[in-house]
Amino acid sequence: MPTIIDGKKVSGDIKDEIKLQVEAMKNEGKRAPHLAIIIVGDDGASHTYVGGKITSCKAVGFDYTLMQFAGTISEDKLLKHVDQLNADEDIDGFIVQLPLPEHISVEKVTASISPEKDVDGFTNENFGSITSKAPLLMPATPLGIMELIKRYEIETKGKNCVIIGASRLVGAPLALMMSNDANATVTLCHKYTEDLAAHTRQADILVVAVGKPGLVSKDMVKEGAVIIDVGTTRVEDKTKKSGFKLSGDVEYAEVAPIASYITPVPGGVGPMTIASLLINTLQAAKNNLK
Image 1 (cartoon, one colour):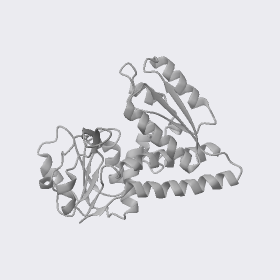
Image 2 (tube, one colour):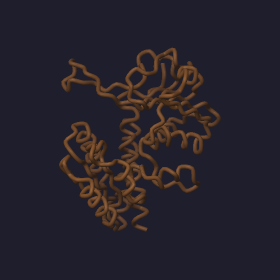
Image 3 (spheres, helix red, strand yellow):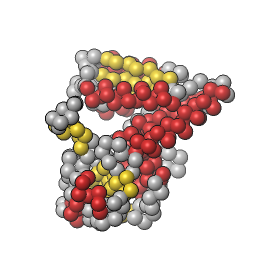
Image 4 (spheres, one colour):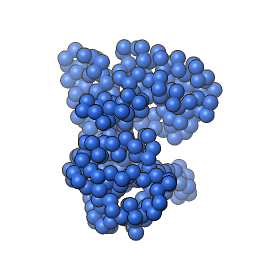
C-alpha cells in the first residue's frame, strides 16, 4: 500500500511553525501579520473557504480584516476597495476570493492588486518571478504541492513529472516550479492533448488538476508512481448530511494500491493551499516591516 500524503498534518505543522514566528515578532515589539479578505456575493462554497482562512489566521495569531460585498457591487467600486488595501500600510497581504460575479473581470481585479500584497500569487509579476533566482510570492496551491513533496522527501531530480491541467492557478506555475526548482522533466497536458494515457503511464510523479471526478484510472498509472490529486469537486451523495461528498480527479480506490505515494481527497492538497496563503502573508509582513 502507498504512503498517504497527509496534507492536513503537514498544514498543521506549518501553522505551528508560523505561530512560533508570529510570537517571536510580537516579543520583539512588532505587530502581527495582517491579512485582508474580500468576498463578493453569496456563493456558499466561497464563504466556507473564507471561513477556513479566518480560522487559520486566528490559529497562528494573524490579524485579519473581512470585507464582504453584495454580488451587485460594480467593478469600479470593487477596484476602489482594492486600491485602498494596496495603500493601507497596516495590511500586509490580501486576497479577492474567487469566483466573482460575471460582470466583474477577474483579470482586471487581479492586475490591480499590488504584487507585494498578492498573497495568492496571481499577479503577472509574481507568476513571472517563478523562473527567476529571486522568486516573490508564489501561487498558493502549487507552493503547497511543492511543500508536500519536500516534506515527504519525494525524489524529483530527473524524474518524469506529468501534470494534467494547464490552468494559470495550478498546472502552469507548477510546471515551472517542478522544472526550475525540483529539476524534474515536465510534461504539461491539457484538453487538446492526444492519447493522454500514453503520457500519464510515463509519469514518475503524476499531478491531476482538472476538476473532473474519476478522470485518472488504474490503467493510466505506472506502478510505483507518486499521485498528487488536486481535483476537488462536489458530487451528490444522499448518505451525507451535507448532501454531497468531495471527489478527486483520480479513482482513488483502484489507483492507490499501485502508487508509492498518493494524496487523498479531501485532506491532501486542499489544506496546503491555506497553509501557503499563511506562508505568503508572513513573508509579505516581513518584507513590509523592513
